Image (cartoon, rainbow, N blue to C red; front, top):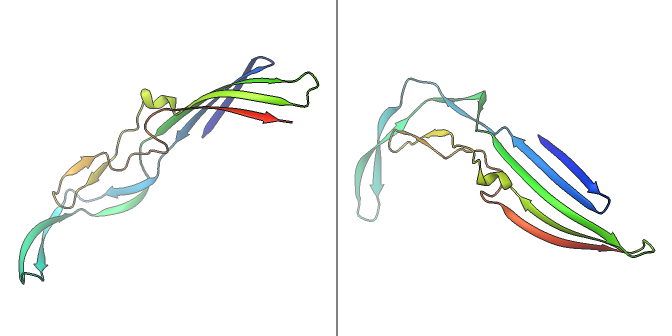
Length: 144
């Protein structure tokens, strides 16, 4: 969802803001009480030897209500307009900052199951649709 607000305090200045809210992607849901372990044989063909490691499995299924955490973004832009007296040549000078809310809010990572340790960890499936820091920009548009 995107909410856009344009404010024009005077004819030659425009303040643009965009607030975006993303609900996250669908992820798997763990269904059993806990993980199950099983042995895995690793064979090294160069030395003609092998060894066993223990891996873990946790039954998972798709659930339409199990999604990554929310992501919020806010962009702001201030534009200054002008032109010559005939109105044929116009210009716009703007300054913008994208993803301002990254200074205040980062979406928390969802938990995932590590098949090598058998533990539940955090941070892998976070909803992130932009860079994790604000990006400033400026520009000039000239039209005739």
